[in-house]
Image 1: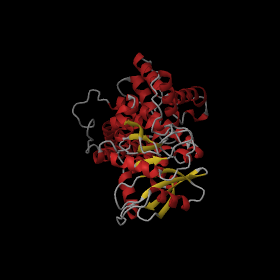
Image 2: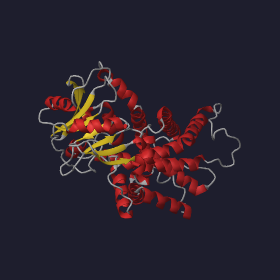
Image 3: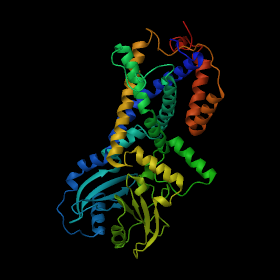
Image 4: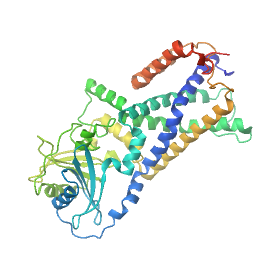
Length: 444
């Protein structure tokens, strides 16, 4: 299949790489759009799931020590990792305890220290969806696959914009809205092109704000910050999926700078003194209070608000209740703040319900883009061939093209590695194999 379009060889080459990127990305786009849209509505889903534990009879609470003791008794051999402050009367306290290589979330009625429910932290529905979205439930290998798909999705979007760009066309039909009376072929073409232009900037935003979580890109980002002197203490977003032992010590929030440091046993009365100090401060909920790590002086009280610009972290002396340190979001390095804003927008938490609706619309448009592109491919492909555009000849690589590829390679090293592999495989293996014609690498 070749392209008889303005721009000759360069247009054909761009379409070819658009096709390659789409073949890799479409299954991931469908998966990530679906799981991401579900995770966007996490607050509402968790409120619905937890309603039996947050509609308790309001009554005077027993001490936090008693609540923790009940949680520890429910999980023999465990140690306190975090205590989550109840957000209002009649709501259960959440106590996270750890034993071995796992953490357990225990719901405790504050009025009588009655255990209402226990569930492994990683077995919670929204944690499962989080990992389905971020690492396909297979840990670091899944994170690498998702990151690879994200990198090529950027290529798919940028090449798609080039192919969409109006060339000598009059009017907005087929450019910003689909033509409905030109037959099925024209309808699917316009649906794909128009949905692509409307979703492109939003999709690029979602991809770029999701990269800090990725195993390879997140590690690369940390190294660059170390080299450039812009690192500013531990980040508050996970990179990849930590080993089970580290998860047991730190959970998802890395309150001790990403180091797997064991929590010391809490002294009686310390937690209640810390709560008495922290509760009146009005820190954005949920507020997680963790006992000191080994060799650390104070307890940590951390806001785990999904809207990250509202987060605050304190260290509090358990013996006196005195605040030792406080760090608000606006005191962090500007890079951390930029990433925090991006992650909050990515999760649908930055500007409330409107953010959730916009993210869901973006996911729906991405699904429409993937489905319409697949339909176009299926309807146009020659019988017995994959349907990739056949290279007319080698395009001339302009300075702009080389600069764009280099920029993408620097921004996303994982993409540059995969691009080199694909180019070498295409040139030295696939072109010379019997499957070369089926793949569209040479004409019949």
